[in-house]
Image 1 (cartoon, one colour):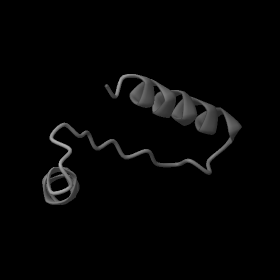
Image 2 (spheres, rainbow, N blue to C red):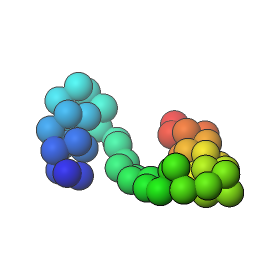
Image 3 (tube, rainbow, N blue to C red):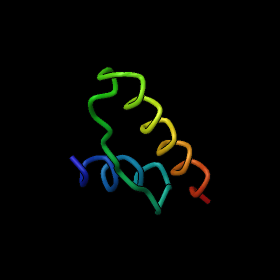
Amino acid sequence: MRAQLNVGIMEYCGIPKSHLEIMYDVMEDDATRRVLLDRARQLGAGWF
């Protein structure tokens, strides 16, 4: 999956630097959602 998304799609689209992080159990409970949203924010803030 990582090779398909990072190399097959992102590099094809001209994005040489990409990162795949799978977040699961999003629907588990509010605490889990908060943790995963915080992680998504961290990843987005450090993108460039």
